[in-house]
Structure formats: structure tokens, C-alpha cells
Image (tube, rainbow, N blue to C red; front, side, top):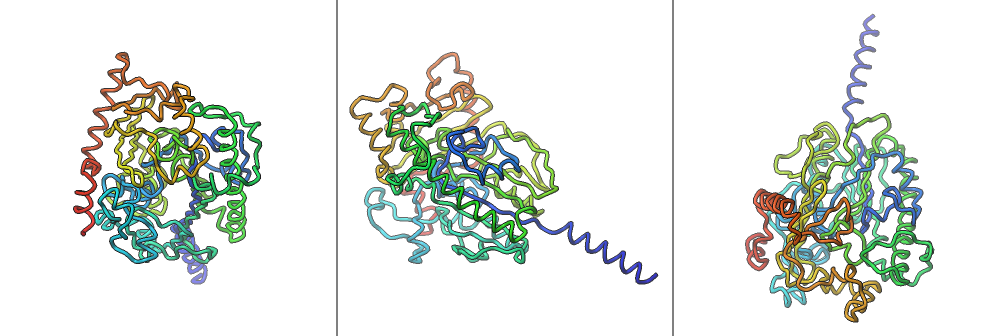
Length: 470
């Protein structure tokens, strides 16, 4: 009888421990892809069988947004759960990753960057003071793994954040609980010129979706086909990861997130405040047997990733995080009424734009109307499509709609009906019939800027001295 009770106690203890086991969480991240470019969001111009298979097992969310339409600021919001313009990580290339980690600089090298901006590379001490969510996971027993990307536009303590960083070692079940990020850069903007001359994996002439912001010509079609070819290669690489996760018995019992770091690699996508630059593909595969009742149409933002992962892991969410958990133990069931996105300096080109969208309308405020939306970013000029559009613009060969991106000065305010104009070509800000919608969204934006104490208000030379500790 004594052995029988011991057996019952052991079973109860074992079940309790099993139920309290923290789940493995795997992130598959790709670069520079807008939501509308992916097959599980309705695009039949490309087939990605490995991702589509996971998507069929997943919750596919309709409205995930990058906080910024460029990588490092957006990534800073992911790892902190904070808006970049509230923690001083909003100017793209405030910090140059190589200068900090490869050369060990606290304040970066002086060079062309400083000649133009009169500001050296710097890291925000506000951001540095924030405990990253992988660090919190690590402190709670997780093995935290990042295979390559550590550029967060500020100095992240890699040792306290990651158990293993910049490694090609394979994770194994023995390391559970695991939080692992796998980054696939084959779809990056640079692939548009690095692989422009390679054999295409889709036929440009067969493409059915030509975004209405571009002319339908051979160069546009070829550029789209290059991107789809890069996506196909990415999918092949993801297939190898999935095979490994299944072999290690990790796949079935894991949360698997898939998303892109911001919008597509084309002009008027990456670095653009428009939906093409900020709205990204996103799905989550739940562990086998796990059920979550969620609104797949809700507005989600990159600031939501940190609290959501902590919620999934059953870890209390720090009060400083500005996002809301949409899955897990601490899931926030409230509906987000408005979604905010921003952009500031890109490389050597200062700018400042803020945007807010509601269910139907989107409002954009341009603080430097003297700047074209088509900033003359040197990195982007390496792209054949960018040079092609520049040539058409300079020769007056673009249609009115296609030329809007190049407009100088740009409007101080823009308003779009996203329900009927998803590519934001018909501006309504000067239409008296929409004055009420414009005023509502303008006031909502003002309240948000005050609420997060938007540091974009401060000129960068002054901001640098405030937050770099220099």
C-alpha cells in the first residue's frame, strides 16, 4: 500500500512538472518582404511549399506592422517591446553594427556619416538600460539562440542576452526550453542587385500581380521575379531547418513564429511609411494540442512580440513594455483601435514622418515636406529598379500616380482610405468631405506622441549628447 501511494505521488509530481514545462519558441525571420508578396496572403505568383505547409498549420494574422520600415530601428522595438522613437533608436544607422561589435567601439568611427550629419555613431543609453526579453527568458531558464542578427541600432549586451550568438550550431531538444531566432537574409534588398543576373526561378511574363505604384514594364517585372526567386531560395533553406526541428523532436511541441522585419526590397517599400513598407507577413504555429482563441484581424505591432513571448513562457511582463501580449498566459483581449508607425533618418538623410491608421483610414504627417519621399539613399541606388524609376521620373515618363513618390515638396499631411485604396495612391487630406476623419486621426497621433514622449522632436545633434553619454 505504501508503494501504491508513493506511485500516485510520483505520477502527480511528474504530471505537475510536465504541465509546468516552458514551451520551446522558434522564430523564422526573413528580410525585406511586404505582406502582399507572400502566397499565404493571397499571392499566386510564387510558390513556397515549406512555408505554406507551416502556414496551413498556423494562425495567420492579417495586420502585423513593423514599427519602422527599416531593419535596425524595427529590430530595437522587437527586442525591447518599446517604440524606437521613445528610446532613442529611431535614426537608422545611429549605431553602425560593425563599428561596435567587430571593433569594440563605444562611440563609432568618424567618417562620411559625421561629415554629413555632424554626429558620430552612437548608442542610446536609454535603450541600453532596458532589459531585453531574451535576457529575461535566459534568466528564467531558457537557452537563447540567435544565429546571426544582432544589429538593434544600439549596444545590446550580447552575453547577457544570448546563450549562443552568431553560431551555426544546431539546437537540440536537450537544451529545452529554447528560444531560437533563425534569420534568412537571402531576401534582403541587397539580393536585388547581387542576384540580378542569375537565372530566374519564375517567369516575369507570367506574373499577375504588378503593384499599381509601378509601371508594368519589363524592368519592373524582372525585379519582381528576382525577389520571388530569392524567396524560393529562402523557402528551400527554411525546409532544411524544419527537417532538423522534426528530427530533434522540437517542431510539434514548439511555438513557431514567421515574419519579415519590414516591407519589401523595392522602392516605395523598404523605408516607406506606406503599407508596402510597414505591413508584413506573420503567422504562428502553436504546439500540438494547444488552442488559442484569437482575432486574426486585430492590429499587431512589433512592440507586441516581447510581451507575447514572455506571456507564452508564463513570465510576468515588465511594466515598461509598450506592447500587448496577443497569445499565452497573460494575453490581452482588448482591441487596439489605432496602429502607429514612424520613420526618421535613413543613413545620411534626415527626415521625420509619423502615421496612424484606424479600421479604414490612415493619416500621415510629414515634418520635412521639403524632402521627397524618394530620399536619395546611396545604398538603394545600386538597384536596377531604383535607377530605372529615377530615369523615368527625370524624363517625365511616369504617370501621375507613379510619380507621386518623387513629389517635392511632399504634402504636410496625407490621408488614405485603405479599404478602397490599399496602395495609398489617392490622397484625401485636401478633400473637405474627409476633414472630420483627418482631424480625429491627427489628434490621436498627437496624443500618442505625447504618451511615448517622442524623441524625434529633438534634433539629432542635441539628442546624441543627451542619450549617448558622450
